[in-house]
Image (cartoon, rainbow over all chains, first blue to last red; front, top):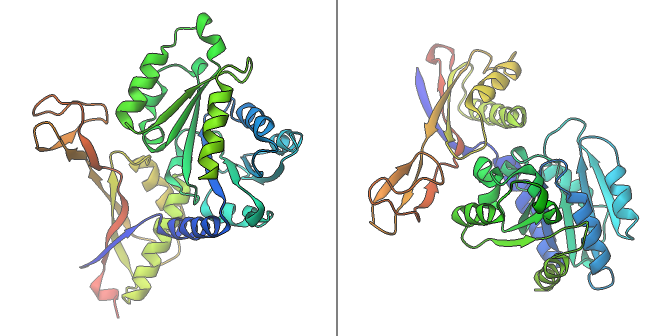
Length: 216
Length: 118
């Protein structure tokens, strides 16, 4: 028996593709956001509201990841923003290769911001770097205030957290304070925006921050 | 659920390394899995067994080497292991331990059957 030392990261093939994407995005001067959340948190609603508010202020495009259907890409296209759909056909996450291919549909040089909406899932997408500048975690208060503590990998990695559906707070037992405290324990540098896509509360603060971030 | 994709990447590395070292039969594969990686070891082993058939790794047993969460506590200066990312420093009770270990996901070693090597 002979033991051979390997010491290679298992995901180094994906990591290399992600780094190549990152290089390509940097060279084109486009900022890239990787949007991760559970199904039903309001990812696509947030996207719609964000795109509508920033239309004309930023040149944007969207890559939509879904297990099935192009319904979300059509919702985005209805906002007047170019969208490409990746149907993973059962796959639980996007990877560097899928994004490299999808990004080919855009003239990256003409864009300020590319938003990648990952498959609705709080676990799997975290392990796969896509070449993004920032991970954005979206959580709705209806999911409960224990989610950051139950899915700490995502909430540690996320540079920004959006807490959606705050208009529901009077009807449910959910502590925004606990969400904020747990998120900041995991990542003290994190930015957190509380908002409601339904009433519009908090959306201006979020989109103003995003606009500034995309332009730097 | 993403363990299948991870197992596929793992198998690719094992096959590449076996070829590079002229190994014809891999008997064991050691993988380091951090407590803070989102990988379930049993699920990874199950997926690896499903896809390893037919190649030099067909008989390889996956050995998972768990890596605990650990980091430096700025309050007492000790290097400590934590049971979860919210846990207080077990030495001084501080809440600011800077985690720098536990996210590992790597192939540590492969073991070959010498009698089958070139």
